[in-house]
Length: 504
Ligand code: SF4
Image (tube, rainbow, N blue to C red; front, side, top):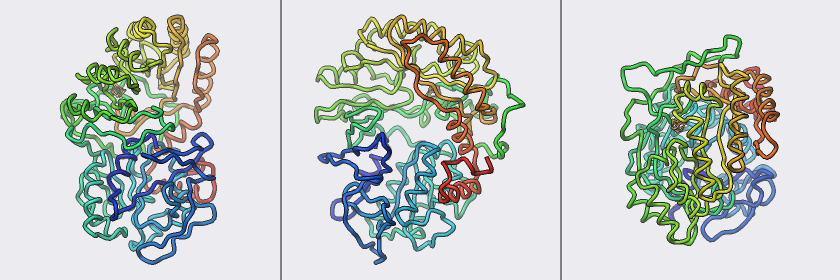
């Protein structure tokens, strides 16, 4: 429920007395307790959020779920009893979970086995930017990139009395920006990037089960003016020039995705809209929540928003909290640090991404060790209690010296204020200059992670990170439509996540 896109879509589809859009959650041990909408405070029941009840679909067919299958949070409606299914997916390893949820709810996950008369399944979410291809195995329509036009078209279709079977929904979404109809085209469209006019987007729900607990999410920007070579959200290089690749060497001994030569879906290039889009500061100020809860400020380029300080001042003046995803260390100022503290900030979050000056330079990160140290000092001086720092291990060409340099930096930062190191394993993303870089290998990355832990002083908190899970992400990110079908069958056979697809 922490996904702003999920919340936004849910709110758009609900039209009193016309459309009831209800939420289904896969309940994990960590999330048990459920989300809360405006005015509701219910928790989960068992493996799937449930409140009991039986329903009849509009087409008259029974909606009874398989035993223990998912039922909606709002009314206990079984998943198989819905007229239309929408899913948002943001993480590669959620693919098998989604497949199993569909099957447990009595819906056929494989598109090729469904009749066009069955309720449509439309899938969007951040994962469509990484690789939409496997989703074609299950979805009638995949919404690639920003979903505003597709949601608007579908809401209008339904409010106009349109049918919700796959055939009708495909007709309604044909030609809508970002909408990919796999039954009609083997190639997805480029990721759609909405214009700045859609911003700010504000969440309908403040939930404790979010990266920003009990704060409304407010998206103030999309896109980024920087061109880090590993990042899907980067500003592409100018049209007509080849994407400037990283100088990181390719490891000939590393594994390579089977479809490494697949077409690269590149977005057209521009430093201006639609790639870097800011909501006007006045619009953000008038959209800030008025229910006494604060705001989780969302956007890849928060540090570049010209009104960031004004927004934080507004929240601080009303005694409201702010949560910020992460700030660029090279743009930190004492004023910003003070505003973070004034809005309840206890942790400053910055991204190093590369673990040494050399790696950061090759990634075109444009953040130096001096920037990171200065950020820690500014945070400490403002009374902020901790520094959280993002970094990736496992980049091609990485050496043990790079690992030792990062351990040294963390130890140095930890003398300023307590450090939380949020590590991840580098996963080459399609559509970036590092697309064809090798992954891992797992053993070497695991060794490097252990080495880093050994050389960090005791007070530094380091998250759990799995090189194996990252490899599964990489396999997904480079999978084809056919791989997606194999992944569906593996998930239905009860295989553990993606481990057996493509014979891995
Ligand atoms: S600054 Fe952050 S969001 Fe922008 S390209 Fe670099 S990693 Fe991506």
